[in-house]
Image (cartoon, rainbow, N blue to C red; front, side):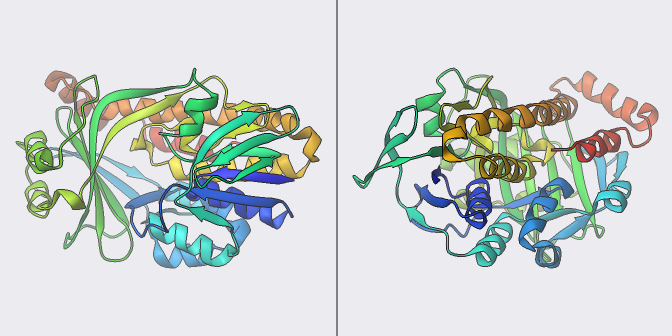
Length: 381
């Protein structure tokens, strides 16, 4: 079996690792010119960690990451709203880790090794046949593959080519990410700070630095943000925030060190066709608020590899059908959680925000959100 994977992010390399262990001939193409030593921090849920456990990475990741046992929810003036307690999840399924994205990637590549990655390369032409997929790469190379996998993220060019009915829906929110140093926060805590529409999430990633995710309402139609406007836009979004926010904003002095993104999700009824399939954010990107994206991508890789390794090359379409049936319930569950958090955390109305804060503080059932997360981990993939 010959498989081509477009995209050497965490979904692509994990799938390649599983397939390589199973004796499959795998080629990875990546549009970036080289390994990128960049990225910010991510949440690695136990459901994602158990996938990486197949490669013996749990101890190494535990050394590099920080277990999060609590999330403290406060308003823009640092008035307490609620405290989420993750210890029940940790006791039953393992710690939720926050970690540098690059550390996850580097640990995986060092452990697996031997992956054939063609950098600075894209798929220029793709032609589907019953038994093979014919590919032309940007370097002019032509080859037939038994399966082609799109793992190149939310802006997947393969999705646009093969699945034109799939849509990227913009949430009407802007998001910025940056590294922050020198904050004195309680150990094993993350912090959510909510204003009127704008808000931020602050968490440790590694042993010294914190990552801040900042969100604010934006035009319903996405408008590209110019680098020279970035600092001013962030300051405008967080006018009136007190406490830690001025300290955070004082460190944001170089637009090049701040990542800006629209908050979008992918909507699609199907993600496979003949011998082409999508995984990761190419398939199911959703709001980053839930922090579950990387873990879902890791699960995609495991489930797809299991189905592929259970068939011969002639039955690959059957394997993709089974993959889809296994993943749809999980992704519906994850999207419901993600969209619910998006609605809950980012209302624009001051009145709605005040009602939300009061209701959460005094009426939210104990560990209501935690029970939703527990159900995610009880799901059998």
